[in-house]
Length: 185
Image: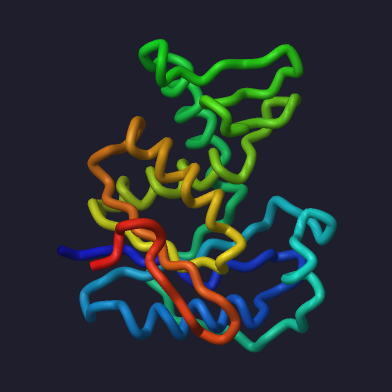
């Protein structure tokens, strides 16, 4: 089955780091010749939003040959469409707006008080975009500190987009990696 593999994620405000290059090395180990690749560039957040363990690292030379490059800002309209879908799910799976103005799905924050999509909702939109490209299987390769965000993403996708099989590889800077949960093949 043809798959789309996301690796190399970085913040535009800082540039790619060793986290980007390491994830790309792992992509080279797991990809099949007919798999598509995707580079997701965060052009939404600034340096203050970055985790210290990424912000303090020097920028690396990084020019991967990818099938698709996606800017995080382009996912906002699709994220808001998905929020609307989540708001109209059956009661137990419905997103709700709190008094603060923030939208939540169960215990997962989806927007800030101004209605701006947060990372998890933008990741759901990116997953939907991968599906719109014609993929029913996807792999995200991310640093280990994104584990909870990927768990939350997979919880939402089981409700909103069950036809997409998303697997996640988490890694450290020693190039040790593992499949998230029981998704190992």
